[in-house]
Length: 557
Image (tube, rainbow, N blue to C red; front, side, top):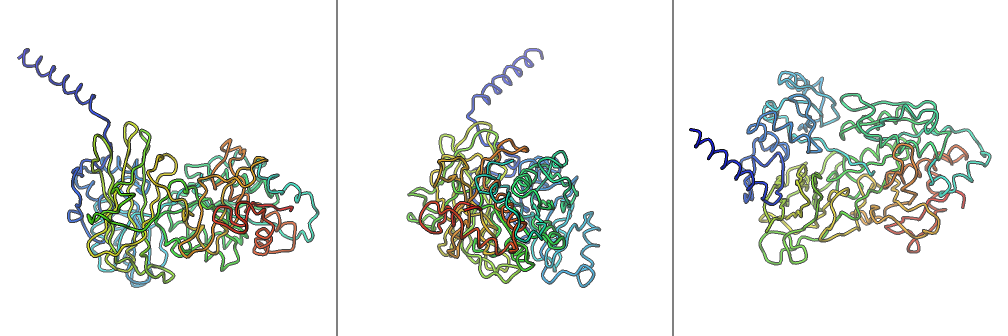
């Protein structure tokens, strides 16, 4: 017995040494449901009304139970897990009236152990136990269920003098009747209380539209943006609203309108949330603000260095897109950095004000890693067969490696699908050494809206005329409009962050400049926009262009 135990221990030791000597492989909580080399497991997914990522979540629960789902939620940006319940968005077949024909939906969700958080028109956001998702999908009045759309942050300031605001501030107002009201729309305002009366006004008005009511939201990004607005216009009254999903964002925008804010400053972008031509559910909220005379200022995004778009080409006729003669689009990621890739193509159909007519051309997205060859990891296989509301989007996120690793994606066109223009966005924080890059058309949603003033990023230091930050999102939009509209200072001093960079910092400079002029002049914010566009310093190519817009923000020229 002792000899057998010794042999067993020796074998275990050798096995451990062997495992440690293996090359680093991709690590992810989903590996136990994936079989490397499998190219399509769509037939194994549950209820077809579930979007692909949510269906995989149900599979994970079936296979590994709640602990496996909790592990996945740690790395998947769209998954909100509250105890045993997951947050989802359900679309119904007719206009939603919880007290009318669909009043039993709230009762049914409660019967399943969940709760409805928000209801807007044909969409409602709810928490539901994992055991109840397929039961909810089985209802005839449910059209589809998906994970919530989530935004991405476009993570005394030097931009104050750089824009000329210091000169204008000292002038007497022509008709100083206005106290500007500026709404800061963000994901969180952590630490704002400690800055009241110094970097922020003595008082601010706040309201959280998150399901947990937490105005801090786990980020100080909104606080940093508010600092810049206050630096630019100390007389502005500030309103803070935070959210976590698109449905909650709609509630926040309506609250801003009720508070009669003049300007909304939003340093947030969205992926796979619209056609890039100013339509879609996010841009619809910009249009709502404009219809109520609220001016929307939005960062242009930080994706110019991590964006690609081009026509689908399949020269070797194997069904996969050829990227420079190769089916693989490769990129590099450091160790333990969670990656994401979003893909869409120009087949959204018609936007009717509430939904797209849908895509009839099916594409799929596959993820690989390189270790002596390319190895299959994961896929996004959402169906696109012409049904209303089926968007031309795919996305993969949550994967990481225990060591620096080369990753790659493939794009497959299903049989019978037409060749479309493909657009890809990668993790702009950590991915680099992209095999290809295409900065044009990288402007973020909703900066693509005709009713949004899009702001790009430039350095504030003297001597840098005609310079710009290469990450700054640029146009044209999918309907060939020039974006951004203006550029403003970034990488500026900030109490919250120390140095605040990205187009996130540029956006509130413009919002604050408009508030300052509104305070000092008899003009409306909309009139002031025209004034600023006309007075901008024309950097770059002569005239408006897709890097600088009309040029650098300049108030006192």
